[in-house]
Length: 355
Image (tube, rainbow, N blue to C red; front, side, top):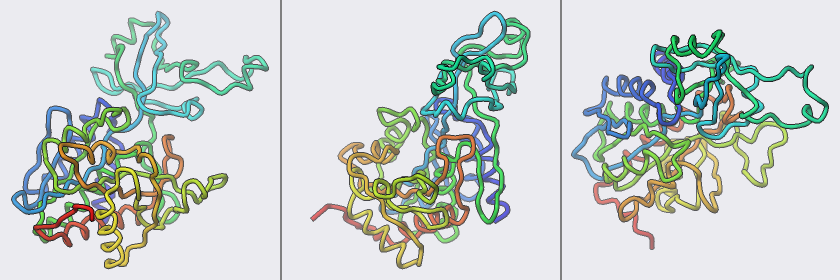
């Protein structure tokens, strides 16, 4: 367990916002190389690893490896960096944060700046902060010094918030959404490598999910791999905190096991097989409704080519899209066990045609 948590920490700490996922993808492939039969990457930046490549059916297990971040849009003469969002932020959590600018000469530390509250007018104090109201200060005396640091327009930025262990088995970090999905699919593949199944199991660390309005790396990797069935791992809202409406989101808590999505892009026969696998393995789970879309890679994968029967397995997370997203380690292990059990229970001629 210690070694695998060390891998998870390396994966979370590697900076890789959408469109700039090279570092976490490299960490993921390096770990996969220790047990997978084949490991490779494609031109989009997706990383793939397979156990039993000639098996049937072909099962794609996908978790996106990108994270939300910021990008430099302008450097003024005084040396301040102005930024826009990569993915969806609540700008309130960006105020006063330490950041890491991924420049051409390496990581440059900085902080987000904002006009002090003492200098805000009364009507300004009542307004929510917007990202355009912020800047990043790397301590430079001017634009020329910023350039000497290797920082220029277009460079990505992540918050400087690595993994921290809390009470029990709870951990917090930036990039839980969805570095943990990439972690879970690889942990499932590790379990399958110990005793290869009849199926071909393909783990994929996809890219650009947070900005993948047309499907991101999930669409291109699924097109190339031609899976017979797919499982997507992502995070979902843990509703065991104050002021969350359970009537809308359901009841899901940290330590309560994986969340199985129903409706939308989730194929009913895949969902049923996930439920059967969870119950056979005595894995706790909850169900979540997805009446319109899942807002995950599942929405892209299930429409590739002639269609891919797809299921979404989610890990409950608190404080999503913040510097300190929280999950339970037990839920990560349960999700990986569930994926491995699903794959092992598949017959070579498994049919997912409804009716």
